[in-house]
Image 1 (tube, one colour):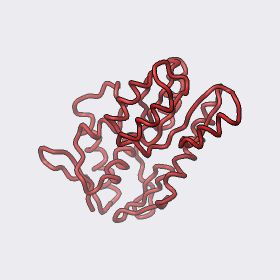
Image 2 (tube, one colour):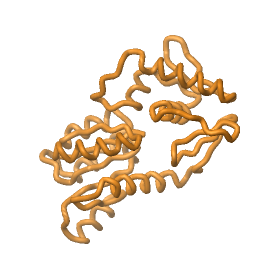
Image 3 (cartoon, one colour):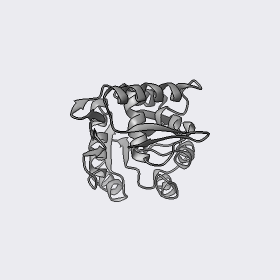
Image 4 (cartoon, helix red, strand yellow):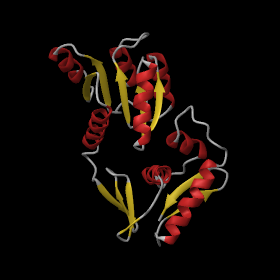
Length: 223
């Protein structure tokens, strides 16, 4: 699950990114509104965390421009200095999903982010099935015929992305963008190696679904 972090303070940005990465999220971090807008135009995110004190752009302008991108519906948590209840109300009425006052606890930020994600998933079920594969979308865990499927975080992320897109084909570039931060050093065969490990685990678990290679294009998940 990918998160865009817009924070003008590089130190705080690194702390937020580090914490969210440790608990299983993929993070892209930017320090300016213009760069954030560029990322919103080029990539898809599940959550956006935005500092209101941007050096180059008004936060309202960025939120308006976001509506012109594929991330128009991405949940947004804004972070600002202690001010007044009226300011918090104004931003919530402007369409943001939560407001957090600095300084904040990283655990609270994570909890608020997960709460926002749960609300945005309200129209879908928490649990779903794909053949005999059972998915808990809130926890990001999987089971086959009632038996827990032991996956690394990256393998679970790969499986989740392919399930969301099934039966459409995903290219290696798309999978890389979804599973790694934009500035990560990723080896050329990282996706192939992960696909291979995931296939072995699904086979050993007797899953009635598989990752199919579409030669020259990419991969898709099928029953």
